[in-house]
Image (cartoon, rainbow, N blue to C red; front, side, top):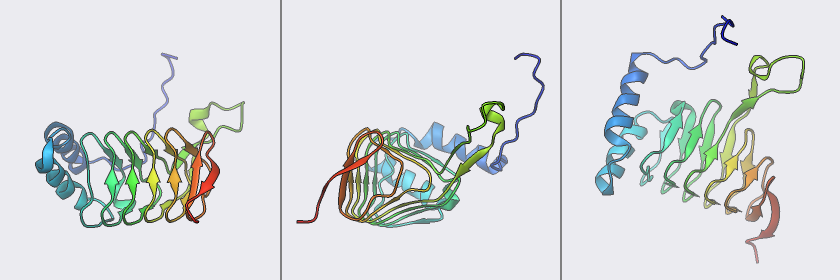
Length: 183
């Protein structure tokens, strides 16, 4: 392993502006408590996101990658330590709640050929769309290419691997529909 002299290509452009932004966020803004911290993080992210609605809550220690491809609606609550990877576009509707340590992924590694190391097989992915008035429970994973319908609830620690219809209640690994919010 030590003699492997391959070079790894980083897809994202990481110039000086990115570096300075990371320093500002992680050393100055990431852990500021109270409403002051929320306001400062909102200013920071609203300037880098594709679109950012009004009254979006950016709590401490949130990680947003490739923010320029992410659209967040109004009154969205993001949980602490959430990770949102916008390698492909992500759209989050109005009035949505995303629990702490939720991970939203838009790409994953290819792994189908056992004769080639996984790290050399590339990646695949797709956009993620989360509707309005959705609640995603803590520590859930939203996988690439998934659409979560309006008014849906995803139980804590779920792994959403396929689309969920409007007003569905789902839970599990992989997430399965266990109910409906419609009466």
